[in-house]
Image 1 (cartoon, rainbow, N blue to C red):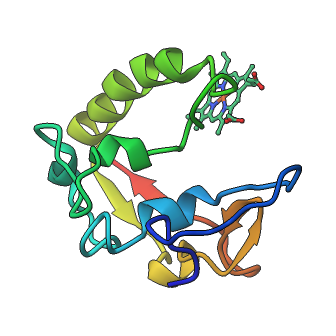
Image 2 (cartoon, rainbow, N blue to C red):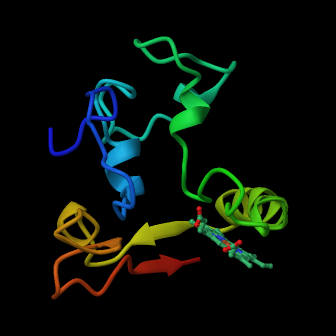
Length: 124
Ligand code: HEM
């Protein structure tokens, strides 16, 4: 484990501190089998093995007073947008495999390998 959110760290005052979302949502202690696509893991307000709400670890929009003010707008757009897309359009991966999306480096946001063209799909 690169970074343990359950570990105890002493952070001196004035230390610049950042967290990578990627490491938070792929921490096996809070989300068992984190690399499996299991959207149902979020159903019914689940708790982690350490007794915290799992939602506490979903930090893609940040947390606290500086968190993203566009969160509700984005979710309101994404829920109908993505569910409509997956229901109405047949999507097939094209020349894309796991290696095109696995994290290979970080520039504050996680990045795939340099040669990755991202996720390519054919839509029907
Ligand atoms: C999927 C879509 C989006 C994601 C994942 C996202 C994520 C984030 C994150 C991680 C931050 C930093 C929070 C922090 O520092 O703790 C942020 C800040 C911010 N976001 Fe978003 N965002 C999204 C969409 C939007 C949209 C649609 C808007 C505006 C309509 C927006 C406006 C802002 C603004 C103004 C800030 C700066 C807030 C501040 O520093 O006080 N975001 N966003």
